[in-house]
Length: 107
Length: 334
Image (cartoon, rainbow over all chains, first blue to last red; front, side):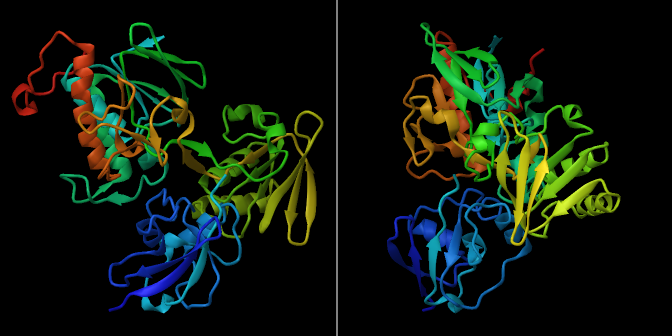
């Protein structure tokens, strides 16, 4: 079985432990939505809205921000150095043990 | 006062298809949308992206789908109020509705169909404390009637096509433009970015990268804009700042129309997609019900069923027989 565990802190500070499949072509935004966390995913995962922005608190190695993600984060709110768009983070075994925090919602 | 059979709030794909289905039943429609063009999210956010799940189209570009839907609706001569957000809905004594937009345009009809998608597109606003003091007094989120701003020294923020296109436009017309962006990477077309660099060389434009507008000053109207980077602070004397950070959808006034709302979506009865208010329907991404999928094709189906009840409301004494388009063809309006 290739499921991994990812910890997600929601906007009220509560930490959720999510069990994530790595063989279903899912991304972190979709994982959060499947657990009914308050991630809107307004644009459906096209890096066009930043409603899935997370702060990554651990050091796993996975892909760098792509061009679309960079462009979106350039215009988003509350962006920090460790900001990523959840919809651009593919769920693979490399992410085991990752801890992220949901960025505040856009005003 | 614009009078019609069905007022459709939202001119996206589902609103447009509703015009066709309504037209088959000889009902006239008028669409209202906050943005200046039809097509909703498809034209506003992803016109060049291919969609693969529209029945009959293995692949179709979003913008092209909008064109096709406009073509399909054309025989039924829909009216459009574009660039004006629907603000209020008032029920009249006879059960009909008047929907008024932000510009005061009024529409009167027995049926209202809300096809608002994720909500109306509103400009992303920068997080500056006294921002609201200068809105419409120097700070503008859209450029309307650009001639009035030509030849002036203006500040534009943003890295997308909107910001770059307008920066180039004004710099080319005897103005001086300060273009401010948070990084050194632009989302806009390479050509526009290239032109902006050329204009900078020609002394008509100045680029501030890794910078943001952090302060606004002025007695009543805007007089000064403060641009900050990690190392510098620059104050520009200007009466105009255009923060062009793109648009994002908000449910907006629809949330105050007395409808049952759940997670930013309108609860409907799946018999005919009517809301808790008789005569008001909600179709497409804007509605919710057990099992709802936010797919365009679902919205198409919902609009078709909603139109059946709309017909009964408008023609209570007539009986309607479903006639297939293969049998009756499409008889457009004059």
